[in-house]
Amino acid sequence: MKTKSLPLIRKTLAMLLLMFIGFYGCKNKANNEQKIADYQKVEHPEWSKNASIYEVNIRQYTPEGTFNGFAEHLPRLKEMGVDILWLMPIHPIGEKNRKGSMGSYYSVKDYLGINPEFGTEEDFKNLVNQIHDLGMYVIIDWVANHTAWDNQLIDDHPEWYTKNEEGEIIAPVDDWTDVADLNYEIPEVREYMTDALIYWVKNFNIDGYRCDVAGMVPTDFWNKVRYELDKIKPVFMLAEANDPELHEYAFDMTYAWDLHFIWNEIAQGKKSMEDLANQLEKEKTKYNPDDYRMMFTSNHDENSWKGTVYERLGEATETFTVLSATLPGMPLIYSGQEACMNKQLRFFEKDTINWDKNCSMNELYKTLLTQKKDNKALWNGEYGGTMDRIKTTADENIFAFSRRKENHQLISILNLSDKEVEFELLNEFENDQLFELFTDEQITTQYKMQPWGYKVFSNR
Image 1: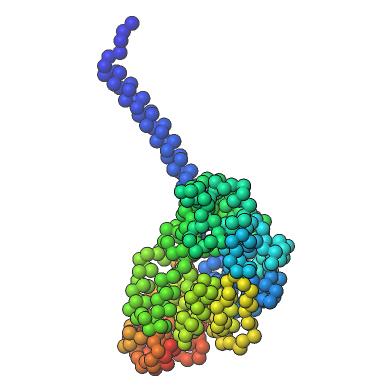
Image 2: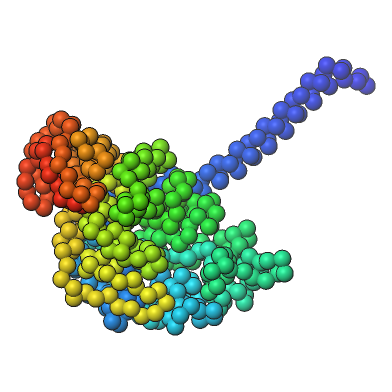
């Protein structure tokens, strides 16, 4: 029998090697394609393009502190121009290591349950249906990072939690003594939490989630969750975070914290117009044009722990409200802001909002949110227009800008100082048929503006 020649052997080995590489190359490619298939680029729900958002504190909203009590306010909120209702956590609250007499909403005892203080499952379903019947949408607050100490998961699956060197379950942050940290390196934690998130969309027809401390949970978990939820219906996802990467596969919107803090400091005389302008430029380079950014003067954390809008912004409250509603981004209103609420709501106790106060903020919000809905220049992400700064003869005090989309235009002019300022707009306007939202005056180039004054012009 003849033996194979050396060149033939080499040729055969080379062919086998290529077949081996090809096989495993195809296998790896298939694995990569499968991984990519588990994620998809965020596509905003079409209904979110001109939406505004409102944070609902059920406990403090009415004397009863129930879903049914809050439901009576829905027609008012609809008339004000609200589109998305974000409900703070609706789940039963842990009792072990509880803070205060009522505990924190963010200490979740049962992810599949309803806080009995708020009502029943049927009450919640009815609330969701009423919201939808009015053409609004509802997202609920979700606490994925940690649980209450008496959540059944601790007894059933102690291995799902983060532990110290002594093997003891720990809190995620030292001061968060009422919660225990989940470990997302455990695949079963991810599976359980994904199923729980799917449960509320499937069984209660909610429209998405506001995800608490989203940056403390692995991004790839959120990516997979968004993919699974979108299979059921197009959802809206808000991250309590400001990481740009969260926008790619998981979240529609993140917090514009840096701008919020600068507004507070400008109002308090600690920062200048230049700081604001610099931050807005950073935002342009850090985020993509279609990333929704949430603009806010208050929320539950700011109100309860850092002070009311009037304590932080003082006489500039209305001015920064106008700025939050006219810059690129989605404006947030926190429960009671439209009633000029000037108290810090207690976080762990009952502390009902006073709705009887005669207040101009309701009409201000109504005008701004109506403009947000009708004027394409103000729409969210790439649906809306970019911001172009307008130069003035008083750029150290006057912040003026224009936004345009198709034949829609808006110009905001704000005196971000406690001084009366006389100034001139230096840009030429292609369209001078712009009228002020609050006075109906036509736009000009010469102005004298009171401390913290503002004017907003749009075409009709």
